Amino acid sequence: MNILAFGAHPDDIEYSVAGTLLKYKQQGHKIFIALATSGNTGSNEIPTREEIAATREAEMKEAAKFYDAELRFLRYDDERLFDCNQARTDVLDAIRWAQPDVIFTHAPTDPSPDHAAISKMVSAMMLSLPGKLQQATLPPCEKTPSLFFWEHGMGVNYLPEVYVDISDVFEIKKKALSMHKSQSAWMEVFGSGLTADIEKMNAFRGLQCGCEYAETFSAFRIHGYMPNFKLLP
Image 1 (cartoon, rainbow, N blue to C red):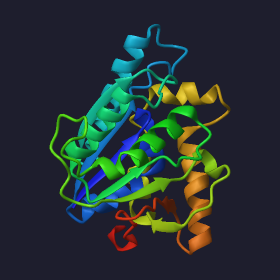
Image 2: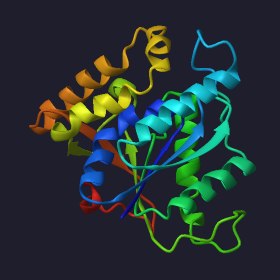
Image 3: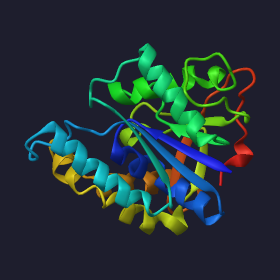
Image 4: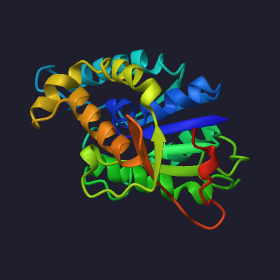
């Protein structure tokens, strides 16, 4: 299968869905990663937005090696991501580029504005995937992918619907997340630590479902694109 993870910022993938992507990779599936922004304001130490974006894209390329993933950067401005005509075209093209069987993205109820924006655009484009007359540069999707939303940061106001046991790949997930070195200092501004956060969150979700570590998801539902939970690893 083709698996697409569509994030707002580079470290979102490793933070939220890396374990599940690693399990797909073990099963021989192909991983695609699309990023709406390059996180070009996500540092108080790197002097310019251009340098931040370049740094974070380089970090993402290193992290993507853990899944042998193909990458696509949309390069919208960090914290300035809005639902508009051009953004919808770019999102639709990114989905068609991956021709996915399964899509993962942020939940539409995520309190982060960028996270919510990309979630809503990915959801909005689902019914446009097969349309020949849509405003897009790539051909329509021939598949009907299942769309799943990953958990909000630290599970704030989030109710899981399904759990994926990532115990056997959790240490690799931490290594992939560690590629985002520029974000360690940035997250400290918010009183947070990337690795410490996922250790707590994934262990808590594992406790709920009877394993050591787990990632959780909820599903998008609309006629014609109902979720197939059997496609999860």
